[in-house]
Image 1 (cartoon, rainbow, N blue to C red):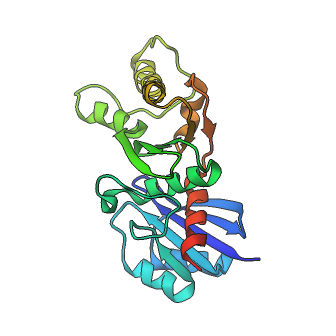
Image 2: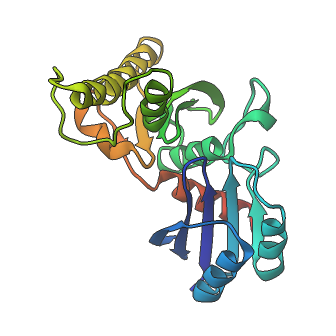
Length: 242
């Protein structure tokens, strides 16, 4: 049995997933990205392969350490991918978006796919049936919206998300919850509807740490998977770590 570790360094969280062959066995949050932390992870799982997706400025010694102890791949625009990027600047596409697109193509090949990542930002990523990543859009994520309203006003507090909120808020907290959570759900549905006007048939995939707060409020049919980025990373690792 082959063990692969897929590391995802996002703006909000550092995480890794453990695959035994192609089976996802575990997902863990990292407290930090120190060499000591990585040493303990590598010692625990003894992986043959590792892959890193990073959208932050991380310590480059991490890459050196993983190269020394595993068959390692750093996800970037020069990686072998199951899709092409015929527009824009491929080098500017975030590694997290590349991973989500790879998962979409892996799950729904030869189909139009709109893959939506709900993290620090919301990313909308469209891959057509010819496996071409055409781009999409980026907007502020949930915590960014809560934080912005707190920091850009004198009296609005910072609050934590809650699944239970009314359409019509009855106090400051519920007004903020309705505005952010329901507002984001309506935004996502609106973007999906806009794509429907251009493409008759496509799959909608949603992933990310904040996914659970929105899926029940969406009217469009979606495929929700909190670990989509890791499944994409594993597929890319298999294509590049030969």
